[in-house]
Every structure is written in C-alpha cells, then in structure tokens.
Amino acid sequence: MLVMAFLLVATFIVTAIIALVMVSLSSSRAYRSRTDSIRGANDAVEIAVSQMRSDPDHGVDGTSEAVDYDGYHVVCDGDSGSGAVTASSVADRRVTCIASKGGRDLVRTRIRFVDQGGNSPGADVEIVDRFVYD
Image (cartoon, rainbow, N blue to C red):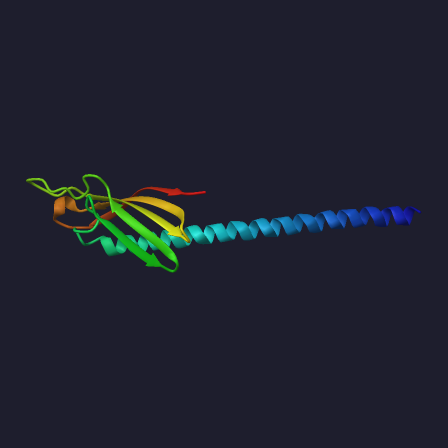
C-alpha cells in the first residue's frame, strides 16, 4: 500500500514537471517569434533609412517613401517642417517610419537626419525614439 501511494505521488510530480516544461517551451517559442518579428521590422527601417540618408530630397515635409524588405513594408513620412529651406540654411530632415508585416504595424521609429545646414546631407542619423506595437 505504501509503495502504491509513493508511485501515485511520484506520477503526479512527474506530470507537473512535464506540464511546466511544456508551458516554458511554448512561452519561449512565442517570445522568440515576437523578437524575430521586431528585429526584422527594425532591419527594414534601417534599409529605408540608408536609402534616404544621403539624398536631401527624401524625407522632407510632404514626402513619403516606401520600402519592402523580406515581407516587411516600411513607410517613412517627412515630418512637418522637415528639410525646410531658409535664406541661410536647410533644416535637418525628420521622418517617422512605420514598419508593418501582413497589414499589422510592428514598429514606429522617428529619425533625424543631421544635414549640417544642407552642406552635408545625412552626415549623421539619430534615432529620436522607437515604439513597438503590441
């Protein structure tokens, strides 16, 4: 009788451990999938930024650039006043890029192209902020 009780308790413990391992594996797969999606979206944004960086006509107020990369779609819109020309210089370009996949927005990134008054377009690129959608 004592042996049967021990076997029953051991069976419950092993079953609980197996269930815990299965839940952990499932969570790990979901986390890895989400991380891979965000990484892919960020890569797509980086490609869009590299295409726009040195061309002062890209990313100015009222313009929109679209890039497709590895199933991700990125749209970068010039912010208000971006690249505005004044009497003495040109304002830095500021864009907001949204990366999506399958019609679902994944990442929004705001970027500033430091153009040094128009003398050196894309001399530096600053990521102002990055937001990951749920």
